[in-house]
Amino acid sequence: MSRHAVVVGAGIAGLTAATSLARSGWRVTVLERAPELSEVGAGFAMSRNAVAAVRGLGFDDDDVAGLGFPTYAAGTWDLHGEPILTISDDPEVRASVALIGVHRVRLHETLQRHAAAAGVEVVTGERVTDLEPGEPHGAPARVAGREVDLVVAADGMHSAVRARLFPRTTARYSGFSSWRAITPGRFGDGALRQYWGPRAEFGTMPVSDTHTYWYGYVAMPERTTIADEHAAATERFADWAAPVREIIAATPPEAVIRHDVHHIPGGLPRYHAGRVVLIGDAAHGFLPTMGQGAATALEDGLCVGLLIGAPVTDGAELAGALARFDAERRPRCRALGRASLASARIGSHLGGGWRQTLRNALMRRVPSSMIQRGSHAAMGWTPPTR
Image (cartoon, rainbow, N blue to C red):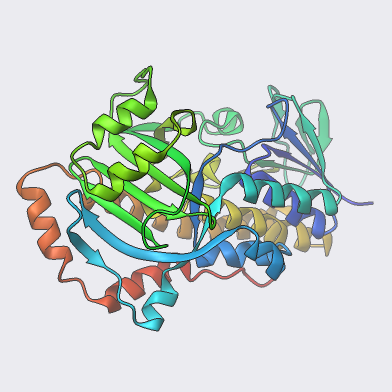
């Protein structure tokens, strides 16, 4: 008789975990509070570790190629368009910062297809209001009226499951809000370009032959209400480099969205409680300054199947499998969380005046070898063996 898992949340982390568990022999039900499956219409830079995760999930070459546009991180410029840190065109360095510019909707649709093919049941319109975590060596978990062997909390930055199990750990407002949009047309040189200014950052990246993603990450009071987001973004970046102004001007106003950015400094003290494992933003929500939120959601989701699902199917104890998951995932995600904070302090969160001048001068001296080492530490991850 197969074991039964409930995954709370049908985002990137949840669908990945559900598919990975199903592929390891579990019966899986995904509970999604929204009335239908959807994903916010914006993009992200899919780094090498994210590609390794989806390949571990069963994506073939066509799946990966269909996700988006092959690109790379070209470096960082100041708000006037002067280079701060540009990436060498050395083949090894360029390979270390290789990316796929992905529309999140396309990734989400592909994950849905893989989940369905693996036999995952998805229930929409169901909010989780009751949870008993159970005990790995004893009582089963209970969630939404179901008695199950495992609960996977993939319900995001403001996780209801985390609030139930770790009430002292809450998401904090970063002090920043982020505009995002997918704009028709090709802008720039086909690479991810980032611009840093006082208390702000702007980035552009192609996600297809015909569309470009951009974001504008800026200091702003929490819950600021803006009647016209496009006009506000236009005004905020009015004195920035021409490529920034041009892509905002070319964006249909209705395509511009914005969200306040929260994070969980340090993440959870452990990623499991009872028969519940927490993954993605529910466990370790980062600042977006390293671009690793979606990537670690994919890593976590795959590892739920590799480190918990498959060993338990083969006869291992759940308690040991949960402990191994925590031991493998928490140190890495904590390190990435610290790196995201450090990147914010020297980048988009840095104040103006002499701070910008000094930072820019120092970063222009950074050798390519240091970029390559840093890139490998963040993006050189490969799936663990069982």
